Image 1 (cartoon, helix red, strand yellow):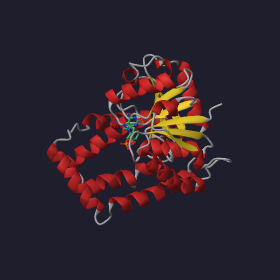
Image 2: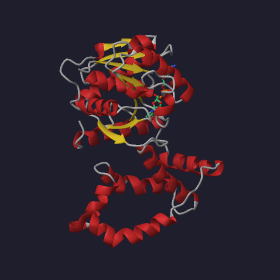
Image 3: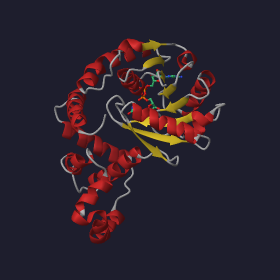
Length: 307
Ligand SMILES: NC(=O)c1ccc[n+]([C@@H]2O[C@H](COP(=O)([O-])OP(=O)(O)OC[C@H]3O[C@@H](n4cnc5c(N)ncnc54)[C@H](O)[C@@H]3O)[C@@H](O)[C@H]2O)c1
């Protein structure tokens, strides 16, 4: 039974992972070399707890007190049933860190990296047991967002993938299995594809930054909170569903696809986007916008089918 989770690296992502693991009634053994690491994690967990409670995600017997902190990552990983690594996004650092965790954790324990874009095949080059290592890529903040992308490397076993998928499901996440290692996994690539076109349209003077955002947030984004683009177009096909959508609209959509831009993020384009966002944000500070987003996010999570 999975009971003790090692959280290695307790920054933005690690502290948030620790909060949801604890809320699900698990023990967390954490490690971070920063002198601020422990205090940051404890503060983060305390702040997240009332939200998790409001969402009904706190299991019976769960407690923030089931958090322990160890300066040595090997001490946190020893005896862990699952390891979630969330150290800095640097391949050289993760290679060393994975070698340390791999040497300390029981050989059947799955070691997952939160990495946003590194390849697990490379991160595990110094591991004795690379077969139990995977990417378990969350979305910020992991204590609230259900998606986890699970990616195996060239030497990952199917058993490790199955165990990771089952573990994330058991704690109320929505894991998806990515069958091949690709840069940025899947969700970040999808975000990049949409953003590339938004930047292109701004750079070409077709639309302002604020209106490009409105075109997502007040339109398709509302449906995307409930279902992805395929199911959305299945419904756009009426009674005939996706098959009719393809018959009717595929040729038109193909012409739009063929016309999409490939603008690059040159310094000039970056400047234009930064200025456009400043105008869009107006007097709202980043903290104001964050508070507003998190409140609304909780409302959306309450009505969605997640946990
Ligand atoms: N921030 C995001 O939106 C996001 C989303 C998904 C995944 N990720 C991934 O999560 C990981 C962590 O990102 P973050 O945003 O939390 O970064 P962060 O800078 O907030 O946290 C990194 C933590 O790692 C600690 N650290 C430094 N050296 C370490 C070592 N040798 N061993 C263990 N810990 C060490 C740091 O002290 C820090 O607390 C990265 O791989 C990143 O790609 C980030």
